[in-house]
Amino acid sequence: MADSPYLVALALIDQGGRRALPLAGKSQAVVAAEGDAPDQLGKELALDLLLRVWQRSDDGPLQRAAAADSLLLVELPMERLPEDLPQIKADWLSSGDTTACLEALKRISSRAWRLSSEKFKPVALTPLW
Image (tube, rainbow, N blue to C red):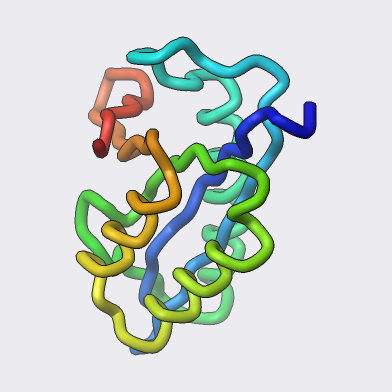
C-alpha cells in the first residue's frame, strides 16, 4: 500500500475575493490501468470535496477560479505529498497563476483529470495530461 499512488481531488475557488484550494485525498487500493481513470474513487473524492466546498458557501458566495480547470483529480506518488503539494498550493494561493499551478502539478504527477458534468450525463473525468 505504501507504493500505491495517492489520489487527490482539488478545487481552485474564489470566495469573496480570496483564493482557496481545498483538497481531499486517499491512497488507492487499486490503481486504474494506464489510459483509464480512477472512476469510483475519483468520484467519491470529488463528492467529499464538493460537499465541503458547498458548506463553505455559508461564509459567502463561491466562484470557480480557473474555469474548467477548477476541479481536478491528480494521481501523486506518496513521497510528493508532504512538501511538494503544500508548496504548489501556497504558490497558487499567493499568485493565482493557474498555468504555473498546473505545470507544477504536472512535474510531480504523471496522470491528472479534469472533472466535469453535463446535464443528464454522468460525471466525466477527462485526462488533463
